[in-house]
Image (cartoon, rainbow, N blue to C red; front, side, top):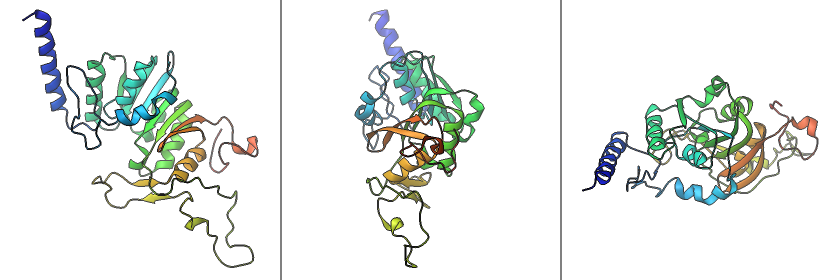
Length: 270
């Protein structure tokens, strides 16, 4: 057997052993050598099949751009952005095991330049750096304080674009809420009917587990996802998949923009 083949098999053996040692994996990543990290994932080839649905909506060339992947898990999106030539890619997660998985995957795929660090979303100000693209996928519904997280991202790390995804439940319709909600309907003592409309922005609270996962706390409907993004200072550029939004940082407060602005004045900063 040729030396090159012996070396390839040895590499595959060690890689397979490392993948098993760091399991279980939530992201299925193809590492080559016939090795994937979660081949029996209950969602299938996740998150690759989901990414393929909206990949074309992202910039194909990220040369000289910086990327922050918040809640990077095993590094799938950080690696995909490095494939697009991003000059700096940082993935953060609060779970050290996920970070070990991400380092293994990035190294195996030839992207040792990707950095990974243990950091909570509530601590992003400590990074002391702003990024051209912030990825915030699959995190919001795991947080006890979701709007605070969006505020911190907008204020401290998002310089231009935000790629956002959250689990959504309920109506997918967009609701045009009034600028001010009356306490009673005009001429009556009846409460307004806005809140009973299925399309009204709703952030469903999950007291117990969802899909067997106790860390799932929230399930917004589509209107709530969009309203929260605007309230935190993001302008929605496109809804590129049912639960995925590509946003830009809105430059100035609503009060200075006037009618038709990207986000409301309540609680936002420039």
